[in-house]
Image 1 (tube, chains in turn red, blue):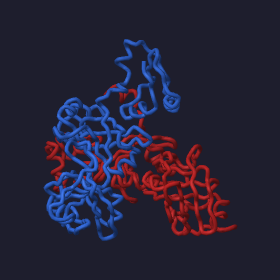
Image 2: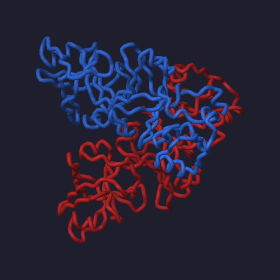
Image 3: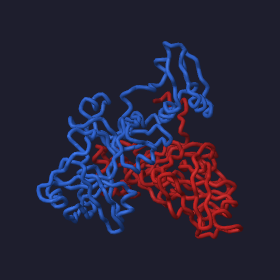
Image 4: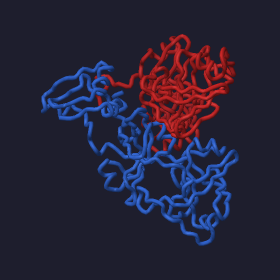
Length: 264
Length: 264
């Protein structure tokens, strides 16, 4: 007995929809879901409840969904850079906690400047780190006139520099500007539940108006982390996602096994 | 005898890379391609040339690549709206031709206004059409304070309205604002070469720094069309694509056949 919606059906497209589509007594399809099947020429098939468990798709299996966290542009500052921008001995003040333990968005912001333009009010994420790093979207790179590579946080070798401007000073950095590579954060328990490990690369699909698949997402596991798929604003808009939406885990490894390949 | 690059290998991830990876005499891997295989623990396997034809992936098959056209926000105007915005009897003047025959970007622009803000200098595409329609990105929707649905061009029922402002007047439209649904344009000959037909829905993958898969792309075939994958600026930035790049056709139908499904 289930309510079957178009969103659920759409999410299953990649795995394939059964044809005919099995329904048991009491199942209800929304009008959009019924249209969705009809458009594809997939008839409904009434089946016994005992059979249904084996043939119905796991439309609601909770562990295959990962919540989305959309990151706006932001800056992580080394403590000597906090001093340079806000004055000697300055301490960042938390505005709100982030989903990852101990991390916070600070009240303080800086301006990032490049050869073509500036971006004001860029939020600082605290606490202060070892190395200063700024994460922007590709869209914002066009505004600055800087085209940074797509990198995981902390992987800064060879990245372009920028100027940061604070209320008490500015700094010219030779490197540290990146477009954040999308990734999943998970605690060891969450990773185990999803049968994932640190360093795995997975495929995730958005399930809304724009069924984009993120085909190579790195998994990072740490006791400090909570389950979250981190994307930037360009990715969120292209996949019609907002923070709090979920994406579906459609493949645990981006590489097919030899056995899978032989079957294609 | 081929030069094998990381980009080519990455494009094949979705289909699966052979393990070991077959190479024939004379094949060369770029250093990045060699690293790419090494990171994944895939050794090279030297094989006879006669076998190679069957086992090597079709890395360079030209018909599986489709050129990308990135569309900025733009407006199509009905002729009475050209009159209302630019003055009675006004004729739009072509600035440059577009990839689709007879279409042009006009010198003229308008301003789109919503409850939260405005976007100036929105290019008009000519010639004048039956119905006025504006296509913006989701990012721009946030600027206007309007959140239009993702639609194919011309499918305007129930879409939100907007105000258009030109040099000689303004119009309030009750509907016509959309986020363009990505789609492939093809001539009948190009469609045949790709074994595609009007209305098909396909999967396309970006092959650069962000290997995004567009999982449900509609194919539109017409003698007026040239082969092009139309995406908006959000999609371009999320997939790190620019006009002139190509995407790879990775699945001709988004639905799996029953036979394929049984094998999973």
